[in-house]
Amino acid sequence: MAKPFASSADLDEKRQTFEVLADGVYALTAEGDPNVGAIEGEDFLVCFEALATPVAARAWLARLREHTDKPIRYLVLSHYHAVRVLGASAFDADVILTHERTRELIAERGEADWASEYGRMPRLFAEPSSIPGLTWPTATFTDRFTIDLGGDRGDLVLRYCGRGHTEGDIVAWLPKHRILFTGDLVEAQAALYTGDAFHHDWATTTLDNVAAFGAEALVGGRGAVARGRDACDAAVAQTRGFLDVMRREVGAVHERGGTLKDAFEAAHDALAPKFGQWPIFEHCLPFDVARLWEEYDGVERPTVWTAERDREVWERLQE
Ligand SMILES: [Zn+2]
Image (cartoon, rainbow, N blue to C red; front, side, top):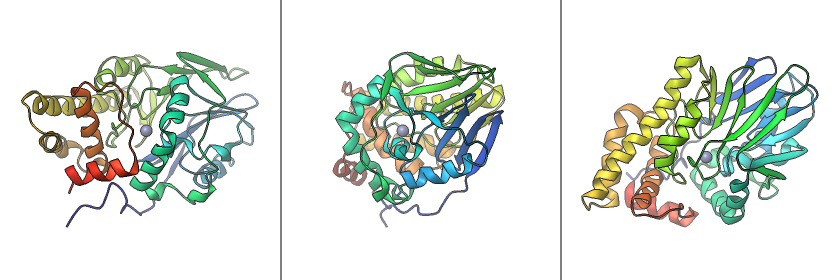
C-alpha cells in the first residue's frame, strides 16, 4: 500500500487549547496544527498569525472575543505560508505586518504555495471558498519593528533573526513578560517543515538569535506552549537537533555521491526513532530532504513548490 500523499488522509480534527499566558497575552495551540496568538494593547489588539481560511480564523476570533472586544490594529504574519496567512481577511486589521522579504515571496510564490499547501493538508482549509485571494501586507520592515502597547503594557518587539524556515521569518517578543512567539522557526514536539528553508543558517546563527531572547514562555509554530526557561531551551534545542541530524545525514550521502532517495532513507532512519511519531513527520520529510539536497547542490534559494512538484517528489521518495 502506498502512503497517502502528505497529510491528505489526515482528517481528524485536533483538540484546540486556549491559554492566557499573562494579562492580555493569549495563545491557541492545537496538537500540532498551526498555532496563533494575540496580545492586548491598552486600546487595541495585535494578532499573530491568521490560519488558513477566514472561516478557520473566525473560530479562533470567537474564542478571543470571550476575553476582549478591543479592535485589531495589527495582524502580524511570521512568514508567507498559506496556512498562516490566508485567513487574514477575517481580522479586519488596520495594518497587516510582515517582513519585507515575505511580501516579495508572496508575489513570487504565493499562488503556487496556496495550491501546494491545500493539496498537502486540506483539513486545515475550512471552507476554502471563503478565502478572498492572496494576503498582502500593508506594512513591512527588515530588522525590527516596535509596537508600544500603551499604558504599562510595555512593548511588543518584532524581530528578524536571519534566514530559517523561510527567507523572511519574524518573531514577536514581549520583554515585560519574557514571552516569545516564534512562528515556525521553533516547533515544540512537532516535526519541522523545511521545504523552503535555509538549513545551515537556521541551525546556527538564526537559532542562536532566537535562543538569545532568554524566553520564559515560548509559543512555537506548532505544538504545545513551552513554559519555563528549561522548556523554552528544550524547544530550541529540539528544533536545532532535527536540523543537525538532517544536515549530517543528507550531507554525508551527498558527499559520497549518493542519490536523493539514499539521502531520504538515511535521514528517515536517523530521525524516526525520536521524531517519527510527531505530527506531520512523514508528511514533511520528503520535501525537507529535497530542499536540503538542493542546498548541498549549491542552489541558493528554494525551488518553488507547486502541486505538481509536490507529487513528483512524493512519488520518488515516499512511495
Ligand atoms: Zn511555515
